[in-house]
Image (cartoon, rainbow, N blue to C red):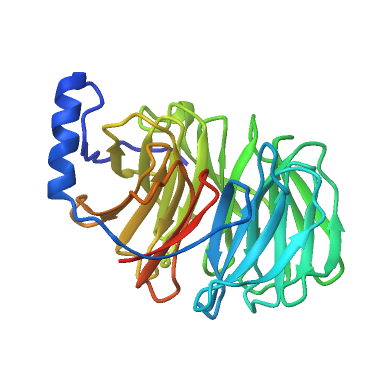
Length: 338
């Protein structure tokens, strides 16, 4: 697919002088409303690399790991704040943890080169899936709950049959590490983001490469590693964030870049997400902040920061869109009101 030029909204010019940046940052604090913190979850002593809500919205699942950590995933009960399940067994950092659509299983992707499948209720290991030659950085589950896919530093993604625990095919997907992978809501597509600065669209069944967003085929695109990708509920837009400090929104069919935002504080964007209704986008950054934008206007509407927050490594909308969870390097998961 030939990628076309699109409209780029520049929210904050990255070339401002240091003094002007500080003035604008102060103006932003006044102009952009701050989100209300509802609860915090922590006490595990590990950086939190990802967070998701359970399908029933009652729990939060987080992947933990980093220097000096215990390399586990945990489930917190949102109402009580208690840890209801812990998934221990990885020997290195857990990069991402996700639920199956029915909420009965948890999948964890780790730098120990494995993908593990667990019983979500009691924390028992069901499958230890080890096929990659490199660290496993990301995982996604098909909407039907029967298949999963994970991406690795070996530049590939591997599909797994969750009913048998057997590999269903490996694909060399990028020229560098596959940092993020998601299924489209209808299960027909896979979207991957990579350290090779590109976002790619794949047929989920055949693993055929359908399109590329960014890269050498267009002047619009990431100029650094792509850390996170997402797809809108209606499949019409793809969202990406990366090391170049930008959040980019793409039209799936044409490859047109619809929206591009630059942060005043030049720090990597580690995580991105669409709201359940597809009208908002959110991103978490190394500048200790998460932000919410309206897609139609391109304006930043809400800012999530403070309370000792450090780099935001993961974020997720609640299924009803009323709240957002953030996870970070400060070893804490926070729940915010939208």
